Length: 111
Image 1 (cartoon, rainbow, N blue to C red):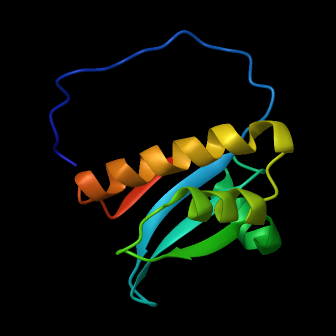
Image 2 (cartoon, one colour; image 1 turned 90 degrees about the vertical axis):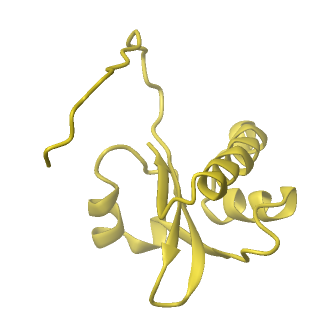
């Protein structure tokens, strides 16, 4: 797209036991913010959304309230994350929401 790359960051590879997906986006159709999360994450989330829509939790987020601890817990519960990772993912969701808002983003996602 004509963008100049000024820096590339590399990280050491790691063994991946499981892949999850979380994102926040502006849902223009419904005029709200939307959290999406799935325990069937990874690079093919679009395929999961198309073939198994029930595996992708979609939770509206009120712009005035943001992602409170309670909202983060609602998201991880709706996505059926395993109990042993729920607290960590809920905390990450709150931080990801902060990035989303502070950067005035239309989409942030983590695979």
